Image 1 (cartoon, rainbow, N blue to C red):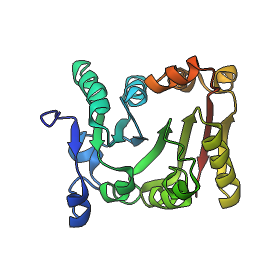
Image 2: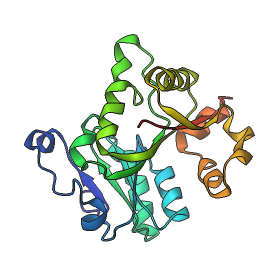
Image 3: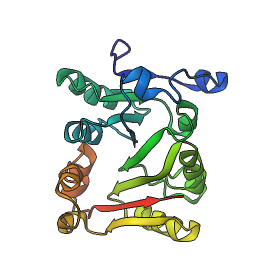
Length: 216
């Protein structure tokens, strides 16, 4: 994967240096256009990033995860399909603010993240105030955060954070597949994309939830 043109791998050394040339310049310097930039956090095999890249070629998509073996699958498929508007960044999501400029990101997707249910792991939840503060630095005003999850715990935690912090819900689907008709057809098509882990969760009878919200 180190030779893949659509994958960048960066660790603590980049964070400590404080220098990342693409920060603020992803669309211009990597994607070679001026299109909006959308992130998929905890992207796994990148199923969502790939589905969105196919649906909306006028946007750029970047999947972020630390698990290289999973990322390889999506990155390889993107190359095989000649999808030039999708790329992958292998790093810890904790470092996300290092890699983007202020107001550079138009939208953030969080797809089936680890719910981190232990009390001492609360700060590690990807919709915790600590992470939201990181997203705030790079997300454009009015940009949405979109969560898709099977976890009742994580979903309810996120809804609590939205209420406590005064964020604005733009769409809430407590039973996603029973409510897909409530969203536009293109978004419904993307939301209907089932990741590897979603297929496992669905087979076990877990109900899938979705919420989108703004933090400004």
